[in-house]
Length: 84
Image (tube, rainbow, N blue to C red; front, side, top):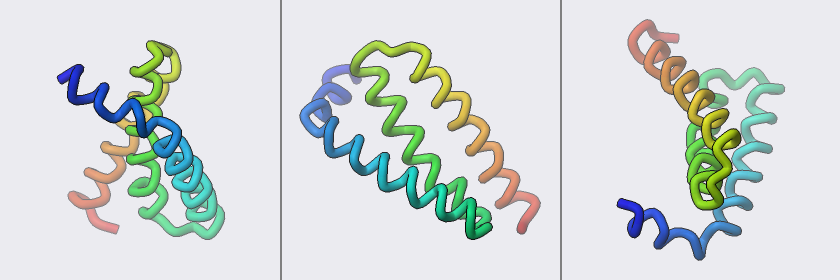
């Protein structure tokens, strides 16, 4: 598993740029009140930052994004189970 994850290390800068774009899109979605798109956009944002933090063993950044990922997963699950 570690070797598989390390194979993406060469794309770290590209992933960070993608995370920036996703962060901007998420902010626009919040301002425009485009619920539930805010959650769907934020999940890959969190996954990218969890991965980048894992590469550099930045525990705090990794755990903060894991918490946000869990909260977004809860929100998405609730959205599909309860409905809009």
